[in-house]
Image (cartoon, rainbow, N blue to C red; front, side):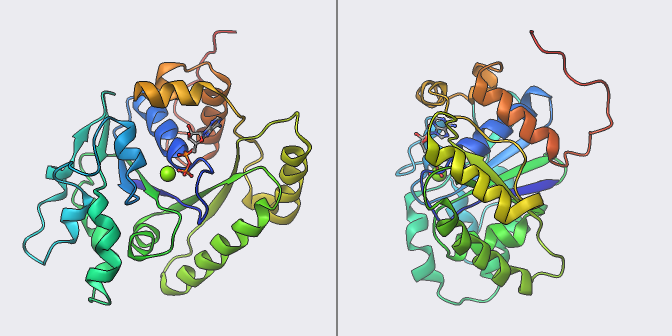
Length: 265
Ligand code: ADP
Ligand code: MG
């Protein structure tokens, strides 16, 4: 299983949208994918019509006392898209840091849970809350690659520095380094703030920044209202095309498999 974490210690930058969009694209390619909501606000969970106040069971149950946690397979929920499953978040996750304190081994709960789903899924996306805590630590310990969506706006780099510092801290406790890709989002070529910050992101982060950008596309809002990934609902919208280009640059293990998809002109 290839596992991506989507994280940034800033909210509203397109993390959840990125997880939903890429998951939808993989499902369209008939690749089995699971989306995991690690945000106590549960926006990914709500996206697919589940209520994070009441959904049962959720990723929260995985953190139950040793021996009491259900198998990860029992946490899977449907998304309405074939091949795409969801492990929802519960608002109870907000209490996790306080509850667990420094209980040993709590940083590897998600990693161990996902390991039991190896045979069922080829891909997983872990959608994080914009804060550093036991859940983000779990995500960074479980994943092979980190995606950092960054809104192209003034002071975009300020928030990003914090995320990169967190990442450097995590790197020291990992046996293998964690590669990351910065994904410029909400790009609007008509605004100076957007254009200038994209230039700045590329200047400072070079190869670490994806060469493209996800444009502002109002259809994302319609898709979230419909509870469907935009990439599935409107595969030829600007936003979907951009996410398809992003996915093409990520290692999905099938880069050499077959001819590229043919577009509708
Ligand atoms: P985060 O998970 O980082 O908090 P979201 O993915 O939830 O951010 O996005 C925040 C809001 O912006 C949502 O309402 C979402 O629909 C919208 N949004 C995200 N990406 C785009 C985009 N490329 N164009 C237009 N709206 C977007
Ligand atoms: Mg989110």
